Image 1: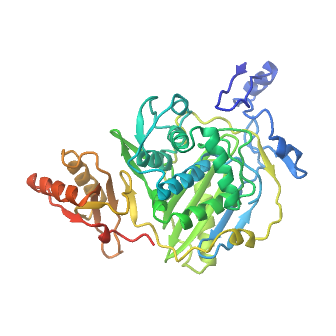
Image 2 (image 1 turned 90 degrees about the horizontal axis):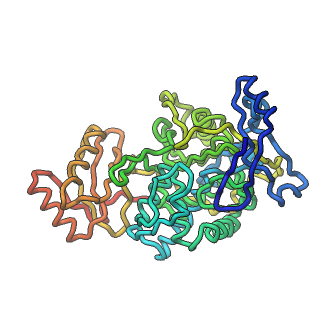
Image 3 (image 1 turned 180 degrees about the horizontal axis):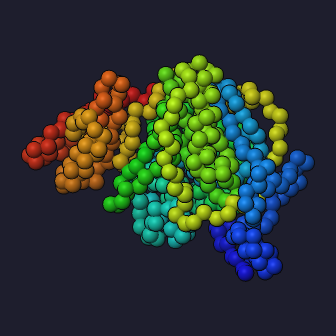
Length: 456
């Protein structure tokens, strides 16, 4: 049997499977999967503490496997718990957090605009799932690309952003690695913008926690994108892969990831009583077990900082695979043993974050507006689905067709009202659109920027 893996890099080669090995695997009742990574990074091989750790074998799961985790107090940068936090592993789609960091950086610097359309190249469109299934020659707005990356973890959308900012994905990956060094992520190397398999792309749980904190600290407004649970893209409802948002109290982001070589990864953020924690779990056996481990670690963290007690969770929903294609048998992975860094290392590399606030957006059906944009409120509803339906009905009318939609979660426990808003208007557009809605007997009111919910 011959397998050919083709990527933007030329690091892959033909792998010829031993027929006898295949027969043995079949006889044992387990489907053997060929190794994705046929060579280790040269730098890692030469490291005195480098070793190969087999997370999953070809037959079943290695019972001696280890996962990596870390939980950080976002107010102080203090490490509340860590296990193998400095072990080298593959970031998978947590890579996209850095892609978004640089996107937010360019948006704030004026080099990008949310409404700007970027071209889709043949290379970007050819990326493996998960993806938005973009078509070569098409153009997509930056805000839709951001939401595609946040919710669907779309590899094609990440590549379009990378090419739009740096010309080529390879050039963008160099910029990603340089930014990682600036943020103090000393053990992270990027080779692409998506996290698709590359033997030279690597990170640690500690570095991913550091990136998560930097995103929250440096881009408090854009950070709310990570709370997006679903959005509409060209007639399709795109749902998030981050199911922790659906059942863990206070969860408001940030990113999931999976490739066979890494296992199931998750960077998560949660707020209780105004106190924010950041957690990272790398190498889960499944999406569900990874989410449960994260919930347990965050519960312990909140208990340690004195924010209530461990709460009873809702039943964890059935988790579907975080890929559009069948999940392959997990691959061997490279890991570096504990480096013995003191917990204060992370705090030294990051400025303390101001008092945290939970993201007020329950979910966004499209993009968040620019700060100076006006919005139209359609009403307040006791049932979230009713608010969504009101928004869909309104956006079917020509006056507001295509406008982003935002469903605001109840602001207070005693006020269980969901507010439906249409976003991204100029003052004149908002007044005109609301007048048109009134003619269709749809109640609405114009909301200036000053009346928006504060971020921080």
